[in-house]
Image 1: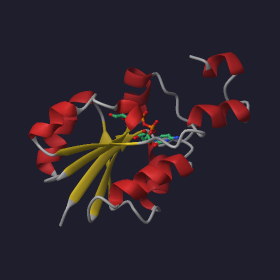
Image 2 (image 1 turned 45 degrees about the vertical axis):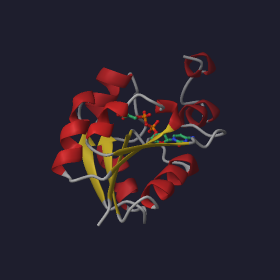
Image 3 (image 1 turned 120 degrees about the horizontal axis):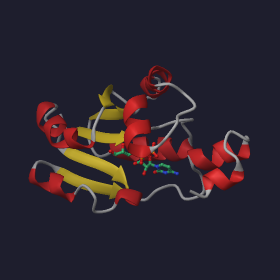
Image 4 (image 1 turned 60 degrees about the horizontal axis):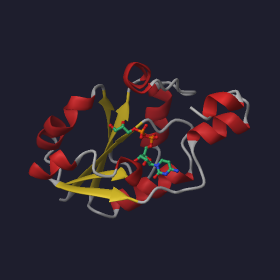
Amino acid sequence: MKRVITYGTFDLIHYGHINLLKRAKELGDYLIVALSTDEFNWNEKRKKCYFTYEERMRLLEAIRYVDLVIPEENWEQKASDVRLYQVDTFVMGDDWQGKFDFLKEYCQVVYLPRTPEISTTQIKTDFGYLKSEDSRK
Ligand code: C2G
């Protein structure tokens, strides 16, 4: 059983996220998603999510490619997650290209091309959740 893991906020889940999850699942048999908690998002990524952790978790668990959702609470947990869950492949979108190469000591590290034309920030701007100057940050 090849086990794959990926990390993210997945707020206002959209087809860019789905493209990532689909391709991640294709790299193995079992996909774990480490979902950023509300606290981690705000304290570390200054992201205020539209959906709560619970709501984002329920959405992810409904996706056919996702087998398990676990919380992402800090930047440091990845190496222990990879060992704890016996992960073979770590996957992230290529906006993170090179940032997690230290994990090559424990597993395969794969960066996949992002879906360029969509982002949660753009959705929030288009729907007036963010004032336009906010989304340029
Ligand atoms: N993604 C994508 N295409 C998009 C948007 C996102 O492929 N149009 C990918 C990202 O590259 C990432 C995943 O979907 O691999 C989740 O994206 P975010 O929710 O924005 O995650 P992020 O805030 O980058 O958090 O420790 C890692 C962080 O938790 C990653």
